[in-house]
Image (cartoon, rainbow, N blue to C red; front, side, top):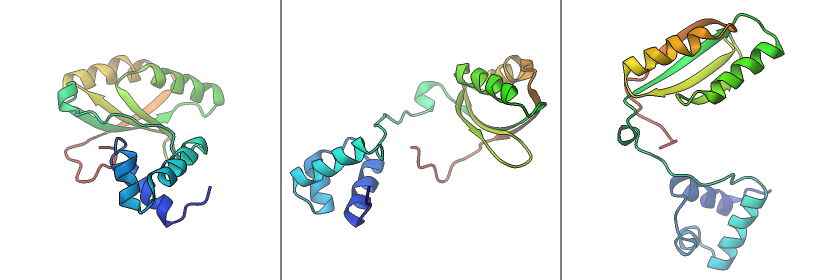
Length: 149
């Protein structure tokens, strides 16, 4: 799908506020409401817009601890990767799991209520997986830019 300047404006506006009305969106991007709606529907059908969701306040959800964890696997096999990925899919603390290049195989974004809850996850989940060889935790102390919010 062609991403002309108007389409880019639509995508930026929807990224910032997925609940914007079609009327307001059309006004912002300089289209008639019907033309704007056609473009949004086309972007959805093409898979450019994959969905809409609510952005939750972590503190209101009981999340007071955020960390990124690099994970090195002990075996570099498809079976080891699949087993690890399956375990991460079942772990509610793991909000993102990325297979990456470099010195480690995975980068995780983990949310927990507090340090004690994180320690329990680290010990009882990550620490019990036979595929895991190394873990390095990076505790987030601030997020001056986070476009997920």
